[in-house]
Image (cartoon, rainbow, N blue to C red; front, side, top):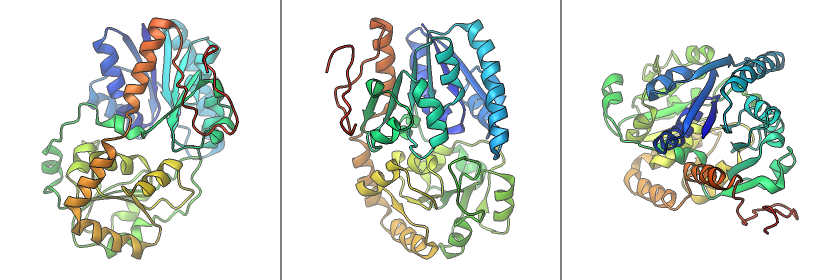
Length: 367
């Protein structure tokens, strides 16, 4: 079977790497497409994947996003018509669902951001099977057009899949001149995302002066953000893609105004503080409730909690890892669905309904 994987954002490369490797191990042919955006091709090169670059990110404006997406649908259509895959899988892609639906190709989509309304309205109605963390109220996805007969909740979060084959390597520490457990990792706000409406100034600019004097490895998303942090002597901003998972594994603490790196840190057992300034994702609220994550947009409170986390590092890491060990890995769920589809020509929809607000989910007549 030929499986098409569309990777449109940097974290998606890590999300799908295990799925791709396991599919290849079992003899499936995998077709990977991507776009020019946020160092994606560098990450795919680092992972050793062959891929097609189709289109690019449209930037921050609605006009740019629309034109880039329309162009990408056209170019993808030509490629997919020629390649003829049997199945499409993606995470928050808006072009792959349109192409797959238009060509009658069954699809599996993973969604973990219920606040990305525009993306979800373009993706969910055209996706055959939607897999999502059960922390998300299914009604939020139904409002965006998801088919109640094709929804599968899982007891986990997407970044657990990023740890496939992970073995911590200290080379990244040598490259950046760092020592184990003696630095903090930070990630700035996703200012180019269409769902972000926060301020231009990052909260991290006010947090850094309040923290203990230790190195900070910061990952900006734009050149403008990079320039705003150049004034801090203890801030290191890598110029090229690095082994971020190993960096997070050996870090003392993660403080992020986004989502992916925060959840990667939690998956690795690293204490984490979220400083995202907008509406929190359901997954974020759930992780806070589980006690494996803290959230605040008050710089003083962030600094105070950071100091407590640094002091209680070992015991808190053990608690995080204990909680995470009981969760469900989305990679395994996706592979199981692909296996069922290959053998039976359909997807297995779990009878666990989640919160569907009165909707009934059926799988070919089976409740």
